[in-house]
Image (cartoon, rainbow, N blue to C red):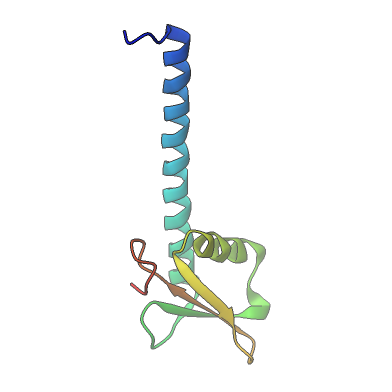
Length: 97
């Protein structure tokens, strides 16, 4: 071996397995959040933009929107007439898909 001890290799393997699990969990959460937006929101004329009555958005939906915003997968804003508009973005470019 290249000078690494077995406990060191095992620790590296555990760290790598944790990272893979975190990435998988993030992909699952992102997919679920996008599906919630598309099924619960009212699709508007603009590409991949969905409207929600702001007063009817529950905590779970807000968390999904924030997850997507944090990861650059959505842009969202509240309108003056009480709606939340969520535009899904392309995962690679951060632009409308």
